Length: 225
Image (cartoon, rainbow, N blue to C red; front, side, top):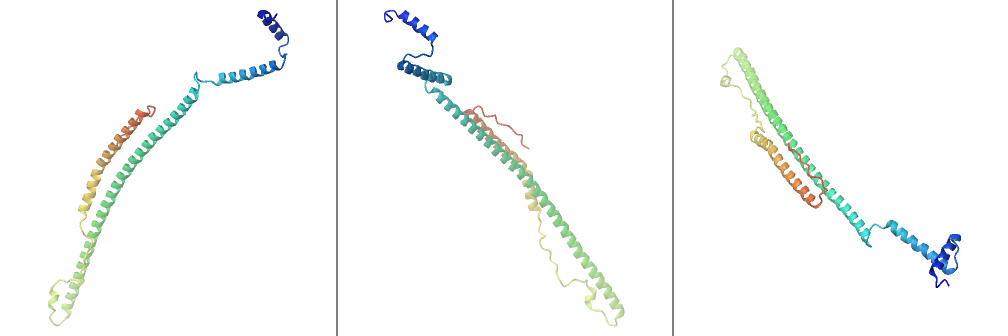
């Protein structure tokens, strides 16, 4: 009778489910119930975790995001390296500028000291000759006053020491100082030229990198000293 009246069967099943919802008629019902629970759980989990409308698209998208993140970090790292190389080169130029300035000042002071020492030495030698000649003349005068014979002919000549005094290292350092002065005067222009060159290379490198990865910061300009 239930086979010929489906509505009566549905009504009977619904009334029995409301009265005893967990009562299972047999093994088939238990299996069907367990299969339903498993399928429902799997469907609920997949529905909760699904992030795409097409199978496999979500994992590919996540992989793309990971690759993009790594790529962005590498570009940022490359930008930082370019910046560090530029800063190191500019610092080196500044150190060279100070070194050239210090070298010139040191050479200038040495040359002036050398000139002063040479003049002092010449004055000492001149004073030595003058004092010796004065003492010899006094001796000759006393000798002539107390002798009974004519004085020797060399008494009439000026006194000179038997030893020759030769001053070495008196070469003129003007040319060396002039060369250092020329380098000192030209080096700031050299520094500015090299600074401009590194700035051009730096700017072109950053702009080229920005064409690949627009997220990279723009080139930071610096004013050459």
